[in-house]
Image (cartoon, rainbow, N blue to C red; front, side):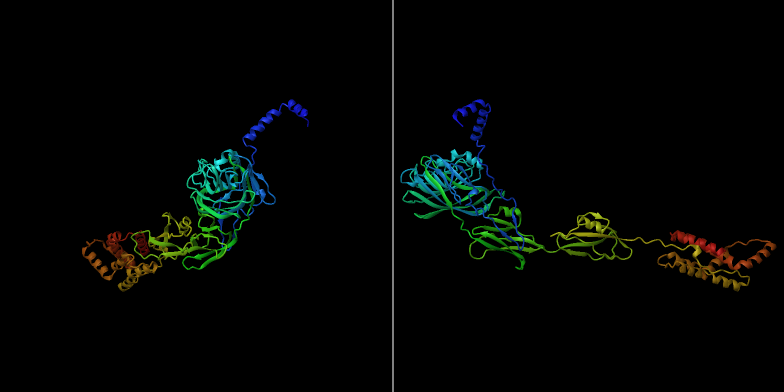
Amino acid sequence: MTKRKINHWFGNNKFVYPLLLLFTVAVSLGLFSQSVRAEEVSSTANRLEAGSTFTVKDPFTHWTDPSLWHNYGSTIDTSDGSYSSILVNNQASSVGYAFLENDVDMTKSFDLSGQFSFKAHSGTDPFKAGDALGFILTPETFDKIQANRANAAGSNIGIGGLSQSVFAGRDLFQNRLVDSLGTGAIDSASNDISIRQTDATGALIWTNYANLSVPDTGNQDYQVSNVMTMNWQPETVSADKTQVTGQLTYTISSATAATQTISQTLTLSRTMKIGVVGGTGGNYGWLKLDYFVEPTRVLNQATVRYLDVDSQEEIATASTINAYEGDVLSVNLTEDEAMRAEGYGFVAPTLADYRFVSSEKMVMNATGSNLITVYYKKIPDSTVSFDFAWTDKDNTAALPQTIVLTGRPEATITAPELTLADGISISSVVSADGTSYASIAEAIAAYPLFKENENPHFTINLQKAAEPSPMLPAIDDVTSTPITPSNTDDSDETAQTNSTSPHGLIDQIESINPISAEQHPLLAFIPALFSPKVTQESQEKKTATAAPIAVNDTEEASDAKSNKKRTGVDKEAYLLKVRLIGTSGIVAGGASSAALLFFLKKWILFLRK
C-alpha cells in the first residue's frame, strides 16, 4: 500500500482514530500481556491403600521443554530443542524473565540447575555485565511481574517491587543502599553470590542474607560461564497450610573457578512461581541462560509397612512409594496433617479393627533401604449390658443375671434372648441415653451400635402379674347327693342326717373348688360349725331357753303326722339356718369375697329342695 493510499484510508475512515486510541490504552495497561495458566496445587492429600503403589510427580521432570517456559521483559527465546534464552542483550536498566508455566508446590523438595553466561558490553571485566543473574521465586501473578519490570531493574536485582520474593544467584554490583554484606567496593562491580528476599511491601531486605565472594577469571573472550543449582528442602508447613519453611541452598561451579555453596532458611508461600532472571542498571552487557541441566535425582523405591504396635506383627500388605532422592515422605492420620507435612504427605490407610498410632517421616536416599513403618493398635471389643430391676421396689425376689453382649465398634446391637418365669413380664426398658421405652427393641433402636470406649447399660424393668380372685363354679355345676326323706324311726333320721352332714358337704365344696385353708381361712372354720358337739350344744341351748308353745290337740295331731315325714330334711335345714344365723357376723367380717356368700345362699336353697 502506497503512502498516498494510506493517507487516503486514514483520512476517510472515521473509526480509525478511536480504535487506535483504544489499542494504545490497552497496551499501556498491559491488557494484552500473555496470560499463562498456573497449575492449581492439589487441595487434597494422597491416600495410601494397603498393597498399593504410588509414584510421586517431579515438577521438573520435563523442565527443558520450551513450551513450559514463558518469557517476560527483555527476554529473547533462543531455544533449539531444549529451552534457552538471552535475558538481557546489551541493554541498560533492563530486566528479563523466563518462568515455568505451572506453580510449584513448595512443600515438595526439588533441584533446578542450568548453565548461565555473562559478558560485559565493553572492557575486559565480565562482572560489569549488569546487576543480577540467577534464579527467582515469587508468589506474584504474571501480570504483576510484567507491570513491575521498571521497579525490578538495577539495584533491585529482579525482585524489587515483588512481595515475598527470592533471588539466588550472581549479585554483580555492590549497591550502596541495599548491599550491606557485599565484599566488593561500594558502587562497583562485584563477584558475590547471594540469596536475597523482599518483604511484604516488595522492598529488598538488605541485612542478614547469605552472601559469598566467588571470583572467576572466565575465558579468553572475557565471558564467565557458571553452572548454578538451586535446591529446596522443605521442613515445616504452617497450621493454615499457606506457608512453608525450609532450606534453600545455592551452589555455583565453573571450569575456571572453585565450587561454592551458600544456604538460608526461608519461609515462603506454599505455591511459588519459579524462573530465571537477568537484570542490568548502569552496567550492562550480555546475560544468558545457555541450557538447563537435566536433573540427576534418582527415582527410588520406599516400602511402607503396617505393624501392630503391641505384637510387632504385620497386619496388612505393605505399600510402595516411588520417589526421588531427597524427597521427604510421611504417613499421617488425617488429611489435614498430610497437607501440612513437608515433602509428600500421605493419609494412612484405614485398617479394620485397628487405630492409627504413629509414623516417622523419611528422607529418600539413592542407595540403601528406604523404609517407613506405620504403627496401629488393635481396637478392643465393646460391650453392652442389660441389667434387671423390679418395677415394685418392695419386691425382694431374685432377679435374672445381667446379660453382657460383646461386639466390634460400629456393629449393630441385637436384642438379647430372655427366658422369664411364668407371671413375670417387662414393664419398661431404659436405654443407654436414659430414656424409657416400652420394649427392648425400641430401646435398642435409640442406641443401635456398639461404640469404641463406650460400655452402655440398659435396664429392663420387670413386673409380677396380679393374682386373680378365686372364682367358684356356678351352682348348676355342683353335683349333689340327693337327700331322700324317711318316714322311719329316729335311727333312719339319724342315718339321713349323717348322710347329709356338713362335713360331707364341705368335702363336696372342696372337690368342686379345691381351695386350701391357708388360702381362705373361712373354709377352714365352716366344718367346725357343723361338728356333732357344736350341734348338740346348740340344740340343748335352744331347748333350755325356748318358751313352751300352747297348741290344741287337733293341730298337734296334724303337726305330728307331718313332722314325722319331714323330720330328715326340715330338721337339718332348720339347724343349718340356726348355725348360719349365729355365725353370719363371723362370715361377714371374715370373708370379703362375694363369691363365698353367693355359694352359701345357693347351698341353702339346695338343701330346701
